[in-house]
Image (cartoon, rainbow, N blue to C red; front, side, top):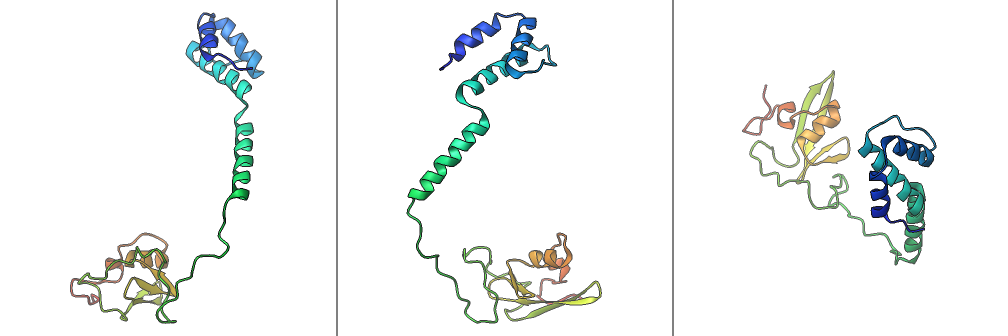
Length: 172
């Protein structure tokens, strides 16, 4: 039952508001709370199209069925991609994407292998500087701010949190 939207639209525009409200009630199964002509026309046209083409849930179900068919036909990997092995077993593995580690060329940052310590809420927090990123409790972090957020639960400037000044030494 292919409808002509232009034909339906022309017919609806020629109707009085009371007739539009009656048509709305007929299509939607409930009376409209609106007397706005344009709103009624848009809602009626939408409902006519939904009844003709199928409602959104029906279209989503068809799309999911088609996606499942395509997935069955797809050439899937028989083996998972390779796993990155860290250079030293004690160093946490940075993310495999190659990005996010930064170059560590900031003059404020101590040499790789240095352990940054700070007292926070009655405990001593220690973070090890790596070639790319930082290690805290066996996890790899791309920035000092990410480490500070993991420790505190809120956003901190990592340089400020660890008290690093321009010389790479902690402030006292």
